[in-house]
Amino acid sequence: MSFKTKSLEKPLSEEELKCLVKRYDKNGDGKLNRQELKVAFKDMGIWFCGLRAYQAMSHADINHDGLIFEDEMDALVEFATKWGFTLV
Image (tube, one colour):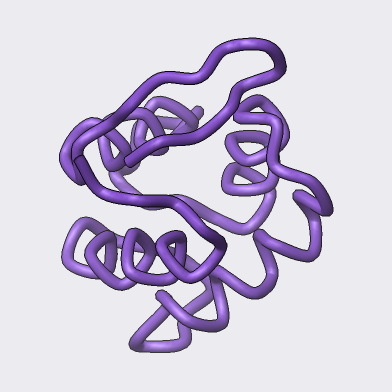
């Protein structure tokens, strides 16, 4: 994937994006909540990070429990490609 973080453009693979987002799992429970996604998106320089986190959660949270688990990360990455992210 390719994205801009504040002043850096770096190509990422799907796995690298997943790893990057997982770093924001602050309590280490293996799940991401909407606030953690919001912070991740903000740090990546994504505009409207709160709205994007809400939209991403709505798309990727397959079981509708308010959390994104490992098995839902593919849906999160799929959603990110709709914003203009491109896979390398």
